[in-house]
Amino acid sequence: MAESYSLSRRWLKFYDFWVPAEVRQPQAPLYQILQIAASQYTSRPATHLDGAELTFWEIKQRVDRLAAALAGRGIGKGDRVGIMLPNCPQYPIAFFAVTRLGAIVVNVNPLYTAPEMARVAEDSGMRALVTLDTLIPVVRTAQIAIELLIVTSLAEYSAERATPPSIEGAVSLASLLAEEGDAGLPVLPADASGEVAVLTYTGGTTGVSKGAMLTHGSIYVNMLQSAVWGQYFTRRGEERILLVLPLFHVYGMVVGMLLSFWNGTLMILMPKYNVDTLLDTVERMRPTYLPGVPTLFRSILNHPRAAACGLEYIKTFGSGAAPLPVETIHSFERLTGGMLREGYGMTELSCSAITTPMMGIRKPGSVGVPLPSTDVRVVDPETGERELPVGEEGELVVRGPQMMKGYWNKPEETANTIRNGWLHTGDIGRMDEDGYFCIVQRKKDMINVGGFKVFPNEVDEALYAHPAVAEAAAIGVAHPYRGEVVKAFVVLRTGERATAGQLIEHCRSRLAKYKVPAEIEFLDALPKTAVGKILLRALREREKGAFPR
Image 1 (cartoon, one colour):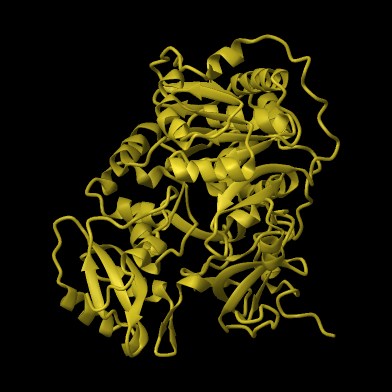
Image 2 (cartoon, one colour):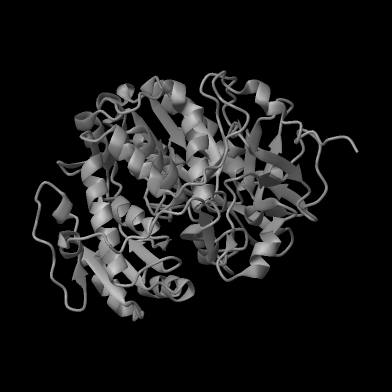
């Protein structure tokens, strides 16, 4: 049987000249990344938070002390340790200390409510938790059985250098770091590639929260895939990344934190996103790299100070986690003079699978080509088995060393998602004749208008082209005749005005009749996840049984 078109890897001819076709998965544990960074960039600053910095060597010293303290309290291989922190130096310290012991990091969103936090703690069976003093009320309300509660504060690692908090029933991170001795540290394994390093909870392809088991090998190789991709334009030991992306999300964890340690990049940490703070930081710190999500770049575009804060000094902008409207790409590049590159990935792939070449053919609206050692196919959404021709839309399935091991304690969900060695993403996309991929929409977000398929991002694109629109999101709402019709939620730019009728008329000139919104509702803000993705699920829940309104 002839080899399928996708497995011929037609995209390889569009790789930049320095990018290899394959990247071998390392056998060493993730702690090796820190070891290399501490030896190569010893006295260079690794983190910056509110005027205070730590060097790579200072980070390693704290990691080793914390690992020894945790080992002395019985934390070891396979134990789950939660990290519930915003972007701060304590995150990489805790991350590397936990994985140094062969224990498993459980990423916990610091914005979680008590019930959400309780579900993650119960499902993962975490024995310890590292969190902020300000989040203790949430932890207490969750009523979870944690053996070791470790508390720190943002002020402790800022220029303020405040005294660590004292909280009943908890131990301070500072006191653990003050303990002496590392006799309890285990010998690093020769091959940790198949061992689970991180549990990151995701809705996955079904919307049910599940812990994706990411191994030392899958995370390490995914970081290296990104490293070789951009190495020709990276000055190791000299770059500065502005990290608004949360470190508890795989995007921030791999492309942000781990890649920064690998390249000796200074991480300018923002615990909470605010566009004014971001622009102030750009002006003051002159970062060279800003990874983000579409809503971040839209918020910059809509800000009156955007043209005068120094964005032109940033060498690279990267967008992921959600489809990026082409209009946003063009507008942002006109503003900054830089290139905004898009990529595609998901938690189950450790982070990334497809990205845009640095120098190769660039196709705005496309997320680029598969990373080294990565195969991507487009299959029919119904069976997930029949491979579709070039240009036809279907479900993306991915195979590569960055794939997760499976879902924690969910063998049926794992078997449904990983079939015959391929990870079924639940995302709809297509591949062109050059091997470039375009993401259309998640399968579950598709709108069915009288049998016609409508992908919400098509509607979003049309609305974003209107000068008064700052943000837009389309969903399907129930209709007695057509089954569903399109409804759009819109946030207007500050100082701009537009009526629903005007926006609908605007869409009629750009969309087929069945794709035009039947209704438009104006909001002050759209609901978003911690990483900045628009929550279509929240909008759908708002609309249950609401048509006609």
